[in-house]
Length: 122
Image 1 (cartoon, rainbow, N blue to C red):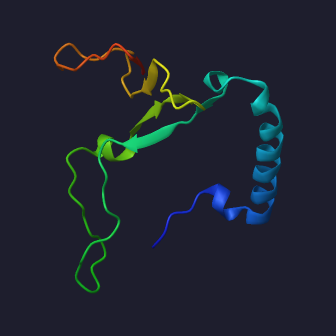
Image 2 (cartoon, rainbow, N blue to C red; image 1 turned 120 degrees about the vertical axis):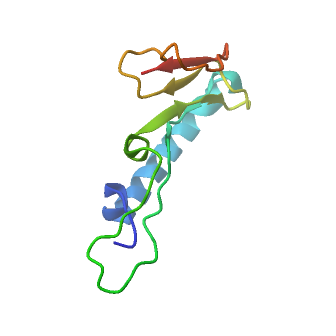
């Protein structure tokens, strides 16, 4: 394996382009009707707790090559942040942060910075 692709990349790019162009054309008609403070964009971004490379040097003929990581859980799990930004350039508060914590709360043993404009969900 040398490259990861998403399902979206495997679909015909011309179909995606046509759909995106249609959305932009429709949205462009409606945006002037509103103040820029009321035109919002929300986007989710996912980040891995730990990034592990899928490339390494190994001996010819070696059947299994191991990669050492700090935590197997950190390699397979991620967190998601969702900021909302207005067309006027304002970051709306709060920013949503979705973590992998089974109880929905951080363990007491972990000291964590608490920001007033961030809402966490687990």
